[in-house]
Structures are given as C-alpha cells and as structure tokens.
Length: 208
Ligand SMILES: [Zn+2]
Image: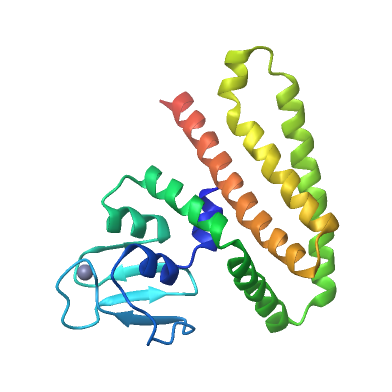
C-alpha cells in the first residue's frame, strides 16, 4: 500500500491539498522545479519538487522525502496517519493518477522501442504473480486458528493485492495492464528487499 501511495499521489497534488502552496501558475510538467517553501519563511524558492521521482527537498533544512513525509510534516501527524489520509485521497483521485502512471510506463516503452519485449514482460509478470499467489495460498492453508489468522493479516492483504493485479493484466485494457505491470514491479522489488532484510537479520542473529 505504501509503495502504491508513493507512486500514485503526486507531490504537487499533496502540496496543493495539505499546504497553502498555489501551483496554478507554475509549469508542473517539468522534471524538477523550485517553489517557495511553505514550512519556513522562504524569500527565495528553496523547495525543490522532483516530479520524476515524486520527492521533495527544502534546501534551507526543513527536510526532504516522499509524499508521505510531506503530508506528515504539513499536518504535524505521524507517518501512519499520513498514510491513511493519502489512502483516502487516492481513492478519490484514482482516475487521473492512473493515467499519469500509464503515461510514464508508455514513455519508458517508447524510449526503448521494445513493444515485443513489453508483451513478454506482461506474460512474465503474470506468471510471477501467479507463482507468488500460489505460495501465499499455501501459507494461508497452513493457518490453523484465529490467532494465527490475525498474525497473517498481511498475507491476506497481499493475496487481495495480487489477485487485483492479475485481474488487471488478464482482463484490463492496455492502460490497466501497463499500470498493473508497473505496480507489480514496484511491489515485487519491495518484497525482494524485505525478504533480503529478513534473511540478513536471521544470519546476523546466528553470527552473533
Ligand atoms: Zn523550508
């Protein structure tokens, strides 16, 4: 969910929504641009917005980060609460953001001129997701009682997300497919990172 938010709620939109920043006269299609920081009395535009990575930084020291960090700072709330706020916002604005992500994927594709590779990628992603779904189902099968089920809430979330992505690839239009492939890659990357962390933690444990 967190990766989904970071990728789908633009920094510019969060700024307009949660701070007094007005971007109506600014060309926000540039890869990066500066505005006045709303977190300090800024005389020069020292707040950089990176639309390519969807991150921000105040060069005067107010901080930097992704869209979740921004909302937490603007509202003075914990990160978890910012995630919840953004989840709601994402539900409201799903359409346009989806288009934006798809555009991004399409841009990458046309840059590389690899349409046939893209079709392979679709197939591959679908197969990988099927495999992961199978693994998760096996783990869910092993859940024996309510306590265990509660502890495996994450498994059920993952299962729901994966079947959503599978559906998009199997039954979606071109736009939905591209979106699902993009989100699947982000999700899988994160899963691999998390798995690596767990592994390192357990090896450290044995070594120590
Ligand atoms: Zn600042």
